[in-house]
Image (cartoon, rainbow, N blue to C red; front, top):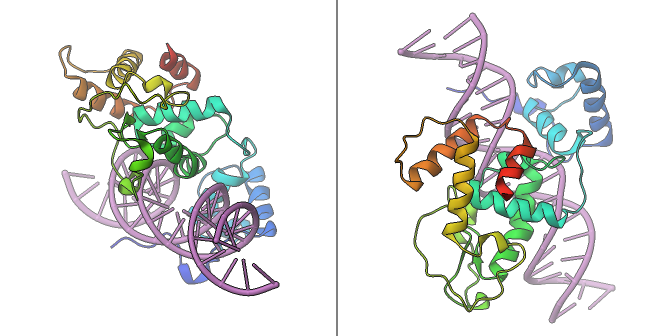
Length: 226
DNA sequence: AACTTGTGCAACCGCCTATGG
DNA sequence: GCCATAGGCGGTTGCACAAGT
């Protein structure tokens, strides 16, 4: 039913060459972003529009930071992930110069492991029952779980001192998250009924967020750290 | 030196949503 | 309201390189 986004047999795949990059940069400098479907032909590229968009947004955009993530960026990613789950584009939206792909990769390759090492389940940001090294999950669903804010109750393991720096905001578990939720609920106009449950509030908050990604990063961050 | 395993990252795929006719 | 299309998103893959044996 749906047509492919491009004629696959006429397009290049795989890594981009310098010439291709240059063509794309030149074209976008001249004509700006947009109309990705027709862009490849107009720019003289044998790529599909999606590929061009991805290359531009993830790699060629001039405002990209690149390089290692700073500690405060790490913290912010962890906090936002606890709040938003795998909504990488939303998370990346709060990190100037970072792309969703970059954040996602960094999470999967660094932060997930880091949390696991500290004995924190990266999916729900709660302390795990056992000592970390005894239960490194093979996969834990490959971060497929939607959200990461499951409401399964988990006793707080007071003996586990390892959950510190990066996860410090989550030391109090659900309580800390609830505070964050409250802040966010206040920050966005919402039709939420006064006596909605925390879960409902969370849901509403999330849907507001996904509908209004243009909320200024600064105000969001401020609220987040209040 | 050769091989294996692990890691990081760019890119692709398929699905979902928004939009316009 | 329905349909087609473009754009966007998250999950996954594949490759290059590093580290370990």
